[in-house]
Image (cartoon, rainbow, N blue to C red; front, top):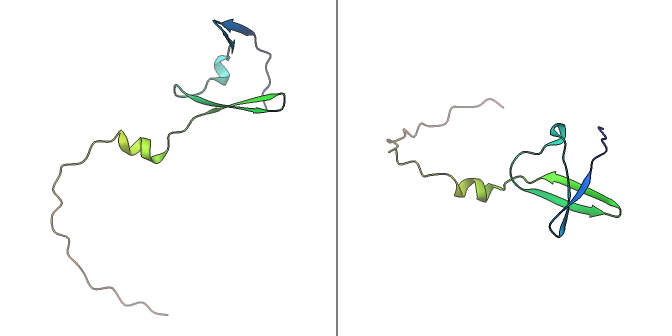
Length: 75
């Protein structure tokens, strides 16, 4: 586990921390959890509904699909 001392500072009425480059998180949102005296900062992963909402529908026509009989299986 990597450990590095960082600086705390004020940003308006909020306390902030400078995150070193090697600890940068992807995206523009994160989750912050308090566990006693520990703060846990995690990348926020998008859930499936957010991913699907950002997709555009496919307008391609799908042709007919041949319905083949199942192949025999030996048991």
